[in-house]
Length: 306
Image 1 (tube, helix red, strand yellow):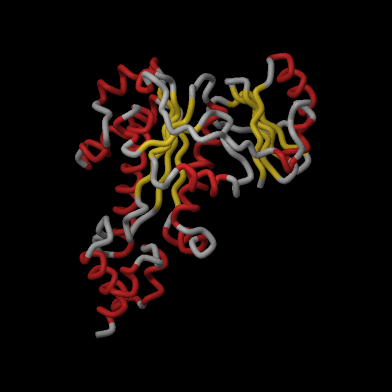
Image 2: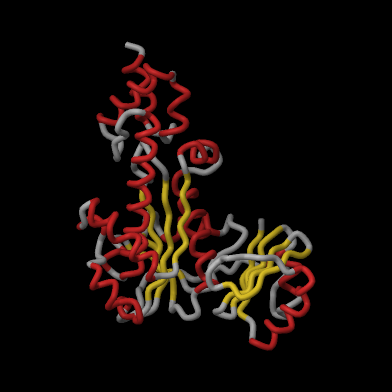
């Protein structure tokens, strides 16, 4: 499915709404002023004056509203490397993106993109938002719902079953690039003013852009990368806290379902718990709770069969 986002004038948007009025659909999504479905494509108008075209014919529909839109083969923009971060980054309105669960054998992979600008900074600081690694699980679970009410955000949760389904085609890095990109692209239309996107770096920028080129869409804002991004901008710190809270609550739910506490991480304790699950229910049960390509799977099978 293809996704294209255009920034249109108020006059263009009014004309677009009139054009699609007969194909209007109902939506309760935030920041949306109008939505329609035409030619296998969903057209969504946001309060930021951005319009998202999403579907099999997105490029054709979008071309009706932008004479500058390139042909389909040229819709991907190759942005130059941006190794140097903007000055006063922490004070700028930015989208930040982070993920949690990639290194844990049990539980989901969660990716979140959040927007924070000067209008949010004081409230976020009052909440105590900072690097999630410096917060307790209790603090994170308390803080995340408050951040969600304060900031525009988009969160993607890949449960173990889905993860195992797509993992053979997507290595760990490509999967994360695809998820970060999707979260950011879904959030962009909700944000009226942002100076860029800061990705909490998990792979060299060149490698990220290599996998980004495989996606059907990419962000319109400049991309920046830095390790420990939570320390550079409150948007990344907020995204990290949201991710962590979702990971913890989901892992807890899966533990109750499995009848055993599923640990975070990928250490020896994970091997032991996986072996217990195999002994009780058979090896196929791991598909529902664990990321099968981890080395823990082989270790657990050996433990359970000896």
